[in-house]
Amino acid sequence: MTSNPELQAIHTTAAPEPVGPYNQAVLAGGLLFCSGQIALDPASGQMVGAGDVEAETRQVLANLLAVLTAAGSSPNRVVRTTVYLADLGDFSRVNAIYAQLFGQGVSPARACVQAAALPKGALVEIDCIALAG
Image (tube, rainbow, N blue to C red; front, top):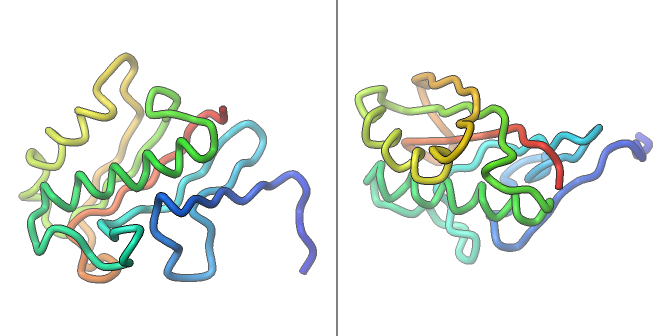
């Protein structure tokens, strides 16, 4: 398999290492495609929050922010997010924390779905697409 010069992998130690054959983000054509983040502590690789969806959401957003920053982007350049919840009953609690990062200016377009299961037993996962740099 050959490398594609139009694609740039983004990596930072300030976010968790991928748990599979993917990148934390890929820069392509002026857009940054960020992989879904769960509440993994970047230093230990362990889940954060002990089942507290609010603590997990804060870590998820910190991880996503680290990837955006590594790519030279920022939350106000995010155009689309997808929020995956293990329980849609957590929607309002997750939404309140999400709004702290994405509630300024033009909020990103978003989908929110309940997933049957998320990696490592996570309660929340969020991915995004942003404008580069």
